[in-house]
Length: 94
Image (cartoon, rainbow, N blue to C red; front, top):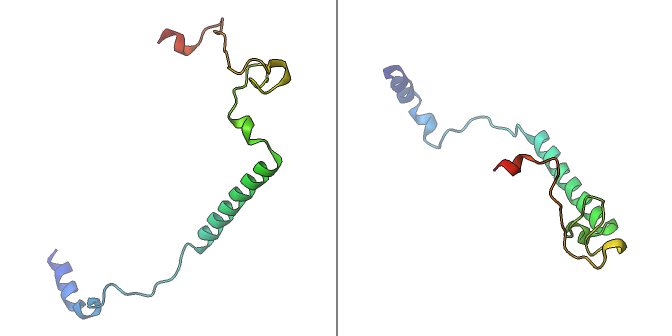
């Protein structure tokens, strides 16, 4: 500890403006990759919004792939019903 204090006393004048050293940007390539990922995310969202149907995300889908209140077969049934699995599940014991 005493050796550290002595070294700090010798270099006291060099720290009067803070720990200034030769600094440079080291993670610029990661920053570019991150920005490209953000642009790709927004591009995928825009493509999905333009070519897809966001309403399909909010409706319930039964086990036969029919949208409740959406598909013609089940247009009169707006609520999703999942029958109890005859094989049981992990949550039956809880």
